[in-house]
Amino acid sequence: QVQLQESGPGLVKPSQTLSLTCTVSGGSITTRPNAWAWIRQPPGTGLEWMGAIHNDGSTYYSPSLKSRTSISRDTSKNQFSLQLSSVTPEDTAVYYCAHTNRRAGSRANEYDYWGQGTQVTVSS
Image (tube, rainbow, N blue to C red; front, side, top):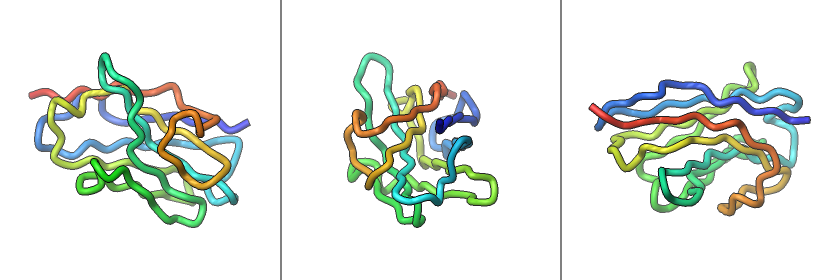
């Protein structure tokens, strides 16, 4: 069974870059067909899909976040990472990494395995 675990700072200052890593076990991030996504949930709102990286390394981003988002991977560590630049307090959320065994989609219910989530607060 695939397991995912998010890690990274819980507090980021405004205008800085938020960086999170997802460590995957129980499966390889390069096995096809797989996609690995970042999804967040701001307080009091629903889940927001941010983007994903496919098993071949190709990436796909939410249009609303594309200019500030970068997803990359380290195949030697079986990890993938999120960078979100120029953060504001509106980026405060619980951030999840998630898996699907098909091409990445933007709906949360397409993802079958999820990390526990990590709280990130943007504040000075």
